[in-house]
Length: 314
Ligand code: TUI
Image (cartoon, rainbow, N blue to C red; front, side, top):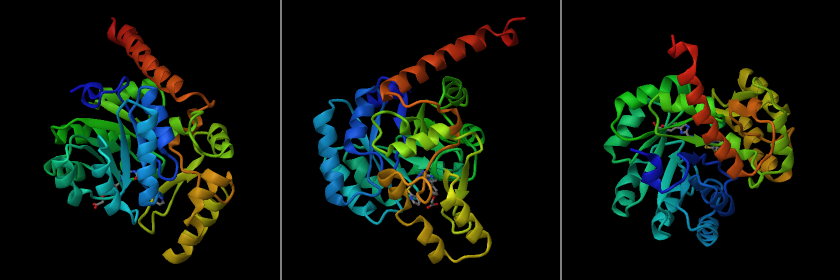
């Protein structure tokens, strides 16, 4: 199955959900540039979600979707709004979308749950998911345990439905690796955070551009909500207090509203700068169309180089 035909898109690229960041305007920009843009329902009120869907519809003729962050208190309402507003595609993260699957399938929505394990992917296939997004721990934000390299091929072997790879993909060779592992497409988050169209504070973008390979860390492992962010003052204090045995209530004081601090105020010291491990590769802020076009062209080049390499020719 070619993901481009399945979703009606130019590149086999689904935008990462990115709660509190991915607006209707941003999703439309990604869709107009040839990927599948997504509005993140996480962080929006129900009315804001409706408004953002209508905004995206006004700004693009191309397909777009909604990402529903299942830990968000508004997930139930969001699950109805996507039906009422006639959204074509839903991706879900940070939980089990099982209770919504029947109504979504009846409404003709295409559903791609994000899965951190083989068992969860199998369960989603049984529920009737159209595909799954196998997301490795290299990703930014809320992460699972397994790496993309280990997770994707095991999910591909376990299910019949299409598998999209996510986590650690921001270059042509990484995209090639995802396809080599059996994925039919990729989900791209961090690389699109540093697009011109992405509505985060410039300080947040510059922090990603400045970051090196080892500059992300994972907070919240003990509390059971592991979140990958760029190392900063907030991350250091959080990890210190976490090690010292601070309770969840205290730790939440660090994280509550901290993503918005980074996104809106550009506070790179006490804000939560969610980012994947690929931050170290990203060196400039560019239009989203250029980022996706280069990714796909470099994927082709990487494949040609591999075919012509001495490895295969002696
Ligand atoms: O959801 C994400 N990434 C996210 S959500 C987010 S917003 C946030 N803000 C503050 C704290 C926490 C989150 C930022 N980034 N990725 C998809 C994802 N889903 N990663 C891991 C999972 C997952 C984990 C467990 C999916 C299912 C699951 O199973 C739960 C179950 O019921 O067994």
